[in-house]
Amino acid sequence: MTILRFFPKFATRVEPSLGLAVLVALILVAPGAGAQHAEYMDPELSAAKAKQVLQQLIAGLGGPAYLQMKSSECEGRYANFGHNGETSGYAQAKNFWNYPDKMRIEYGKKGNIVDLYAGEVGWTLDRGGVSEEPATSLSDFQESLRRNLNYLLRVRLNEPGLLLRYGGTGVDELREVEWVEITDTEERTFRIAMDRSTHLPVKSIVWTVDNETRERKEDVTIYTNFQLKEGVEMPMQVSRHRDGRRISQAFFDRCEINPNLPADFFTKESLEQRFKEVGGKKKN
Image (cartoon, rainbow, N blue to C red; front, side, top):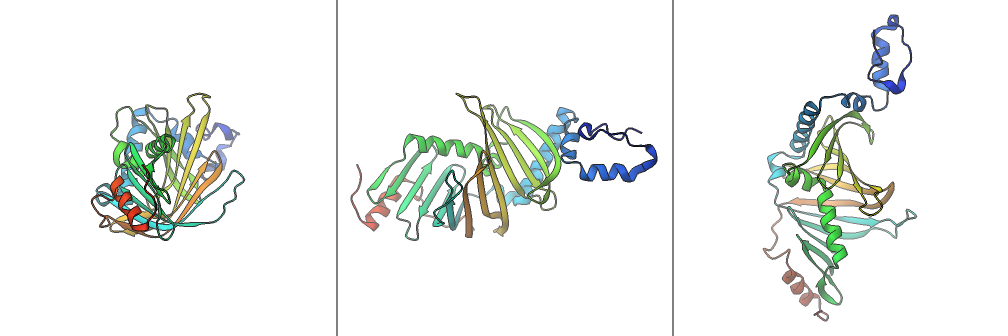
């Protein structure tokens, strides 16, 4: 009776007389047992299983309502964390998206400080007026977009060159999950955990390779407290970690799907108009 073929890390002799109960116990307690079994899958079968899990994930988020979502607005408290893990507190902010690649964040109760990104361009509004976002901020936004789970599921899944692999089952964030791995042509590897009962995302991990040092970097996003908004499941709490260190956290008080926003809301002109309303000198 070959019981331990798929569990080499736990290889010990088990007498056949111990029966099925021991086999079941080993499967239940062995960490990563499902992931180890997935390693033996044929690549084509693994990719097919990964696609199936991704379709379940999309369906869990709302299916057609999720894929056809054009914009969103969320308001809540945001915090950034320093290298020592401490934060100065939580600030009120509003986060607007016009999918797939336009984002606007208004900080403070009055929203007098704004960062706006629209594809490859962006602007910022502060007490001095409206100016272009620095090149580093634009590149950081573009890279964060490529790592964003919503962007991956809604835009990138049909991108040529993606490699899909089923990662097996396990327990993460105290939930029973299924894992999917996706590698793109720019050496990003996504590892996504889906709750097996709700089919909602629990965690997304993105590994990238530094072009200069060739060291691997890890970005982790944890999604909790989902609420149904207009047929779309929205995470009302999002935590982000980088290389094992928490870097930000958001608690949303409300979210709205497809809000009625002005047509020019994601333009430089809208910020210039806001600046006229709040007063001050305009930047050249």
